[in-house]
Every structure is written in structure tokens, then in C-alpha cells.
Image (cartoon, rainbow, N blue to C red):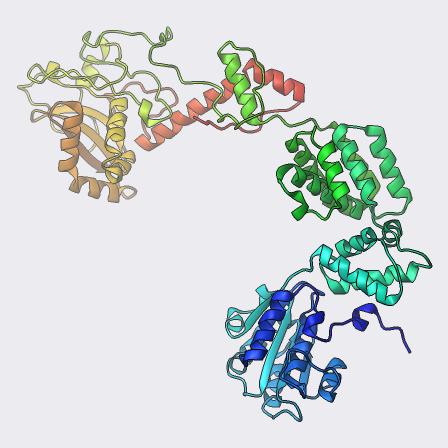
Length: 640
């Protein structure tokens, strides 16, 4: 008789023989005992976890002559025929082969007939996710309301490929991967039945390679038994048969990489290569070993997550205590991403050797927060020492602080009295945030109370007085100033003052402030006893802004008068081309007057950010750091 593999010879025949699926055994047993068996089941889970086996046991439990029962006799002709896959009332269909709608139509016609001898006709569709969309649609109605003598059992390893309409018509059972210790104990008992003895570590290796699959583990055990001749099966023998890396060699390699023992690293690699081990598998196993090292440092009870012996766990905890956990994780990350490089390389050994060179040359990472703290100490004249690593990390800060208001001005920023003249040039460059945008001083008429917008005050320029009195040459032209007011009574507000007003009303009138951002400031003039601020919008592009702001003009005028302290109004115009602003002869650096308030802010913020980036790149500490690490600055972010 031909040899029967272990996976078939020891296939469970009752619910009590299932390995590691107690949750499913309990539900199905209670359903059979209570007479609440559903008409359709979906068994999902990884390969080799018992989906098809459980389907056959359920079929035997329902059709056994002593049933329905949770313990089929396995002696009657129903149980025997189901175990041999030749029972006429149990249809086992391969979903990968019968994928078309015609197969489902034939199945629907067949299940209308009553069972020949059993209680139920049971349809087991394996790999059901392989059915086509048309086949699933043809199965919907039958699966929802099958004949009373029909029970469907669907099995798949990829439940996400099954339509939701199918999932809603079945009871779903998820089969778990079998725990390594449970699977190891199961293999130990099975070997005793076969008359062999083995080290528990050897069977643990088999269980780990099986990845929680009972069938895969039994197939590996078959391979080991075919190689074994006499005596006890050892872990070394299993590793040799499977071409695996020795566990101790992996740990030795991990500790050698962490401590920088270059000679030992390449000696271990030479031994692994000469033993004929698969270098890709060795790289994956090394990544798993470093994963164990990281979890040993990060968790209080790592034994729950790691498949290690108590001796190995104790050794790892003792030997890794001297290394920073972030350095261990750094090496794990590089090994993990190097697996694909080793797998794709034409020479796996060469790729792995260069990967180890990279790991040996890697220096422990210094957190970015520590570097910023060191920069801050240098700026404050303190020693540039890294802070202690205990406790929470400091909050990252920008390498430079904005100048405090009390600091002296640069020579290019003269400080003059606001009462020196009726006109002023634009003040300092716009700050990157709205909170630092100053407003220009306003000289009011003799009848109005003197009040200035907060912010730095600009120096007067007698040569620009006539320009500030001129009216915008833009269609439609604003009305001429009232003759009784006189030129000396015209208040003045510049671009920065207008931006400051938009910032002030933004918290309360967010929508109107956003609409004003798209308008162009074209200067001011005095009319009907009010300060008129000329704002222009492009026809066609900003029609919505112009219409909405025109409707809300009364509210805007009230807010502007309240903000400036003098009767004020906004003069809105719209045309195809922007007017030429004669009132403003200069602007902040990098700002073009032909742009809106929004673009003015964006350009000024970009200018300030560029300046900060240059200051950071030219900082002595940063230059020293880049020279030491042979690096370069590839990105800059303002953290203020």
C-alpha cells in the first residue's frame, strides 16, 4: 500500500480532535445540540487550519445514524463514506475549477432532489472566493432560501474577495493560526504515536516554520522523518534538513552587529554561507531576531509575544540592556528593508555583506529634539551639551527666535516721530503671521480725534505728500475730494494698515475677510467727511466677491470706522484691468502691488521662510554637524 502522509493519516475525525479551534468547536456543538444549525456557513482562515476538515466533521455529525450528534460514530456507512469523500449526499466542489455560472446553475438543479439516505444534502465549496461575479449572483437566491434539506458550507482563505451580499447570508467562522506551544505539544504526541522521540526545541522550529498551519507543520515533519535515521530528532538536524539558520547563530549575529564586532559578523556569515543556508531566509530570520530584541526592551512581559525559551529570553534581556532601544530598532529597520535587496540581487551574498557593512558603520541616532536643544543652548551662550535622555523629549523649536519688540532696530529701520509729516513710507517687511502685521499711522483731520493704528510708525517724507493727495487713476475714477476739507485734512492708510484691518475682523467675520483677501488695495481718498479706501476686484474672476461685499458694505464700513477711530468707508470697484496706484510708490521687499492681499501675505511669508532657512543653513553648529556627518539639508520646516 502507498505511504499515507501524516497530514491525511492524522486528519481529525471528530470535533474533539481539532487543534487550536476551541471557539469554533463550542459554537458548532451548541448549535447541533440545541437544534439551531444554520443553513449556510462560511469557514475562513489561513491554510491548513482545519476549514475543510471541520466541514466534513459537521457533515458527519448531521448525517450520522446516531445523530445529529456532536460525536459522530465514524463507523456507519455515512461517516465512512464522508471520510472517504464518496458520499452521494455530500458534494465537495472545488471553487477554483468550477468558477463559471453554468456550474452554479447545475448545482441549483441538483440540490432540489432529496438526499438518498442521509438527513441533509450538504454542499461544501472550497476556495469559494474563486467564483466569478456571475456565479456569485446566480448563487444568491439559493444561498438565502435553500431547500430545507440543503446545507451550504463555504471555505476560503481570502474572505475579503467574497461579495457582501454573500457574507450577509451566511454564518462566518474565522479559523485562527494555531499557537506555537499548542502545535509543538500536538507534534510531540503525534511523534510518540509514530515511535519517534524529538527535542522540544526541534518541534518548536517545525511549528514556527509551519506559521500556525497544522498541515504545513505535518508536511515539514514528514520531510524531517524521511531524513532521520536513528536516535532523537534534534534542533540542529531540523535546521540542517530545512536549510534554516541556527537560532544561536542568529542571536550571535545580532549581538555582534549591535556591539560592532566586525570580524565575528563576517565569520558567522561565512559559516552560514558554507552550510548552504538560504541567505534570503537568513536575512528574514535575522530581522525576526531583531524584532525579538526590540520587543524585549519595549514590553514588560515579552514572553507573551515571543517564541523564545526562558533561557533565550533571559540572555537577550541581559545582553541588550546596554544598548539604546532606538539603536536596536534602527538596525532592525535597515535589515527589514534590506530583505528585498538581498532577494532581488544577482549575488545574494554580496548584497548581504554590503548590508552588514552599512549596519556596522551606522552610528546611534541622536533625536532631533536633542539637536534643537543643543542649537538653543548655543544661541543662548550655554555649553552645547546634549540633554539627558531620561524623561520626555523636549518639544522641537525653530532654530531662531523672532526679534523681540524691545530689541534695537537695524540702521535701515529709522525710528521717527509720527507727527513729523502728513504722509509716511511703508514700514518694515510684513511678518509671516497675521499677528505680527503692523498697521500704518493715520494722520486725521483737525476735527477728528488723533488715533494711530498699533504697530511701528513710519518716517515722514515731504516729497510724497502730493502723491498721497492724488486720486487713483482707475475706472471708475473716485469722486474728487471735497473742497471744504482741504488737502492737509486727508487721512492716510497704507497697505500694511489694510492688511492689519483684515486680520482684526477675521475672527468675527471670517467669510468677509476671505473675500477681501482677493481684492487689491489701491490707495485712499477723502470724500463726504469719510476716509475712503479704494479696493479693486477683477471682473469675471471675482464677481462673487464683489457682489457679496457690496451687500455687506454697511457692516464693513462700521467695522473699518471702529478700527481706525475715524469715519471711514470702503470704496469697491470692478473692472477688467487693475488701476495704477499712484498713492503707493513703494512696498515691502518682495511684494508687487499688482497682487491681492492674499498673495502679498504668501509672498512675504515665503521670503521670511527663505531667510530663516538661509540663517539655519549658515548656523555654525549646523555647518559643523553637516561636515561631521557628511550630510546635507534636504528640507526645512518652520516650527514656530
